[in-house]
Amino acid sequence: MKRWIPGMKEDPTVAVVRLEGIIASGRGLNDQVIAPTIEKAFARKPAAVALVINSPGGSPVQSSLIAARIRRLAEEKEVKVYAFVEDVAASGGYWLACAGDEIYVDESSIIGSIGVISAGFGLHELIGRYGVERRVHTAGTSKSMNDPFKPEKAEDVERLKGWLEQIHQSFKDHVARRRAGKLPEDKDLFTGDIWVGASGIDVGLADGVGHVVPKMKEIFGKKTKFKVYQQRKPLLSRIGARVLGDVSHSIEERAAYAQFGL
Picture 1 (cartoon, rainbow, N blue to C red):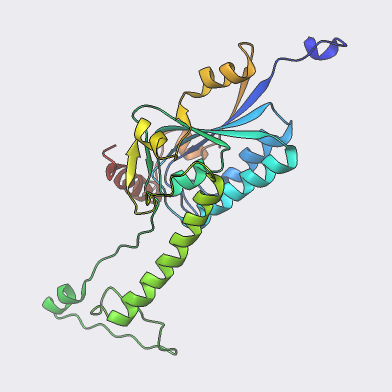
Picture 2 (tube, rainbow, N blue to C red; picture 1 turned 90 degrees about the vertical axis):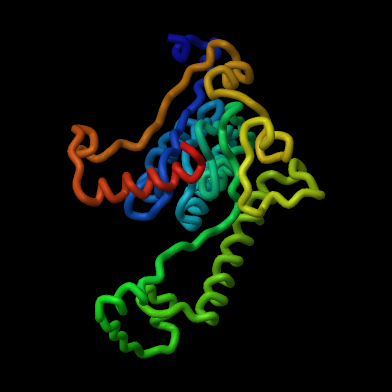
């Protein structure tokens, strides 16, 4: 009833957005899927937006798109954004965390992994062992680079490393810009290393230990209300059904978390 009584101030509301899972176009956490949720969270100009993040990373492009959307809306609506890390905000997950004006972690949260990786398999010896011949015809000398069924070429590796360096630089620029004045000048934080809990605070990658409800009530008052915005899962997922693509994605996601011992 407060909103209808002249002169009486409403209790502040914090919009909570969950950003969870591997970041990937098409399947998983991506800008197309999460955009409506983020837009709704900012729509009524809450007291603040709290990002609850649990992601081992993934696509640098999708990470950038999601973070850019959050920052654009935060500036348009003049709403402060707080990021809260659960199990992990690594690689692209930390890219998302940096969309927050302040970052809070649990004492056991894993953050960082500010690097870029490309991985694959070399299968040319395997198919040769079984008498399989690889036939590739191209128009353009670079169309078959890094073919897993052909021996690796030094020039292809060099070119790939150049691309990875460009993406890494964009990642570093994003972190440096969003954490300006908080990062130590005498320590390289962009090696792909990770930090746990308070150690991440010590190097400026996080601002403190805190969980979303108590921290928001500490800042906005004990009567703070929370509105949770979370992407809706497809109907088949909600009723427990799975298709082959879901199984494949689950395996990939499980492997991504496993590298951090989770």
